[in-house]
Length: 109
Figure 1 (cartoon, helix red, strand yellow):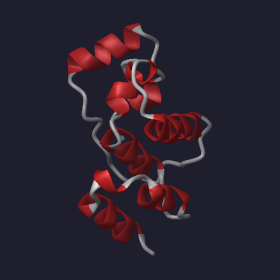
Figure 2 (tube, rainbow, N blue to C red):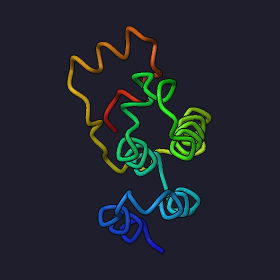
Figure 3 (cartoon, rainbow, N blue to C red):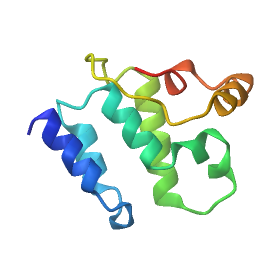
Figure 4 (cartoon, one colour):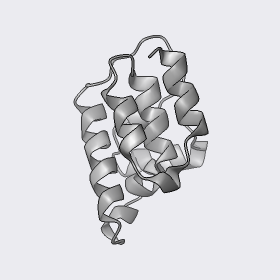
């Protein structure tokens, strides 16, 4: 499956259907950092970065997002030249920097 195919599947994916399809995309050898970050933010990575996971009982989401966060931090996904614009405002990025959120989650590719 090509990168474009993975992105198309992700763009059409209904997140109410669980995390199996996103996990499959993340496990694909064509998945790069841009696509992993896109999945992170589509899976409500903002809530994770903002500390929401500590306040909710969504066990499956918490496991998925924590695992993806750690995989991104450990450089499992490499930059491939694909662009991705982090969906945060300047103010949100500023607040997350003050909270010492790793820069990889705050800078556009």
